[in-house]
Image: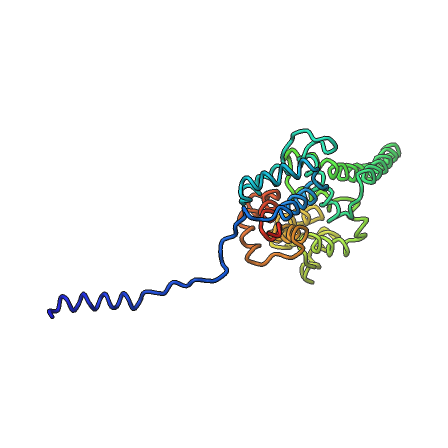
Length: 302
């Protein structure tokens, strides 16, 4: 046999030896969403309504939405479309005005629960009235500093109530809503002093307490108005600190953390957080973050 044919045979044998066997993993078939039982679809739709707009679907809503998912084989795109409808549809609905109105009101109330113990708008308005009254008293008495401080507190509380409509019309994002709630007399009343305020801000927003170094610098920044560098940014007062803490990557990670806890009753893995941060840190699109979680099989229990 000449050398040419020997070379060809050796190459064929070598290729055959390197070829890997196909590995078949049992019970690893792709989910057949078209065969999901109706009861699971109804449970999913029911959960979406409660988590997004605060109520169960009416009978016709349940029927239509389950059929919509069924007609589209319960694809992730169809789930995304249903969630988007509940977030942004402005068609008039008796009792809710619209899905969008109900959704943004529910979200506003959720942030209030997270940060200011869910106080009612009527309570906030009552506090506004008190500050306005003392503003007028101090103005008449010539106490310009007192009048100025009372007016600032009045408008800070007003900005909390205004944040619901501002968020609805996309004038502010979820970060600004959080800033307004912690920069208020109500948050101060709940946390009482600078010591508690610093710990509460870290815990509420970042899901951790400050290190001793972070606490000392933040306390000095707020209480003594001494320039300090905290979380990689410098500031000299309470407003600066609030801006700093809500602009850190940790704040966005905290929002992802909060979303997983409220929707899945668990904390996200580091891989999940890293994946979602790629978009969320740039866009601050909280609605998209919710949709990502709520269209998963884990959330739907499929």
